[in-house]
Image (cartoon, rainbow, N blue to C red; front, side):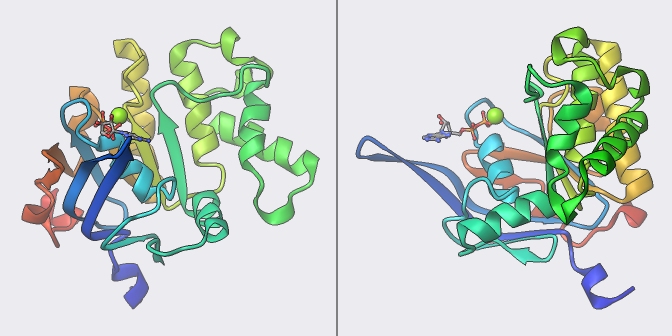
Length: 242
Ligand SMILES: Nc1ncnc2c1ncn2[C@@H]1O[C@H](COP(=O)(O)OP(=O)(O)O)[C@@H](O)[C@H]1O
Ligand SMILES: [Mg+2]
């Protein structure tokens, strides 16, 4: 293992985040510390409004860190320019949302193709790769379907195919089974687990779904802007947890 491979994929220290709102400030994250080793799966819970989505947004480069250190996949996000943050988002992270976030007018294949913006692929190569990714998530027969022609579980699998299109080191998922029935949720959970086990993808998943949380290597909770459960497990790797 090289030194770089021993670095945790996610390292957060002293992260605070405040939203300014009509003159008053709402401090959502307070001095958050987090360490997630490469290929580990962290689940995250907390009451509504506790800052779970904000934390994922910071980890994924959608919100710029306001303080402290945030390193994800070897990139220090604090102080990055907008262009550099956009590059980071395309290359290093994949997002999965509760409401799927697919474009209604595009087919499953086209939705995945949209993510394949790296590396100057030809149109034909993008199409082939999108179909391959749909095959990977068990939707080989659904490439031409538009979102309204797919079940909720299938839509979420398209969204996962899109999220992994650029082989991100990290998948950030925000209540990915929140809109799914039990069986579809189980299929999505199995798929996320396979990303960790077969591709070594690092996962941070906001979920209150017991089946999805049960697969996690460790559990985090946001309470009053503070992350509980992270520091206690600092430095503990999956092999020793297993
Ligand atoms: N863009 C924003 N501007 C102002 N306040 C926001 C913004 N996004 C979230 N908030 C506020 O920050 C708090 C945390 O929100 P969020 O991270 O979405 O929580 P959770 O995902 O845990 O429900 C909430 O009080 C929410 O109203
Ligand atoms: Mg949220």
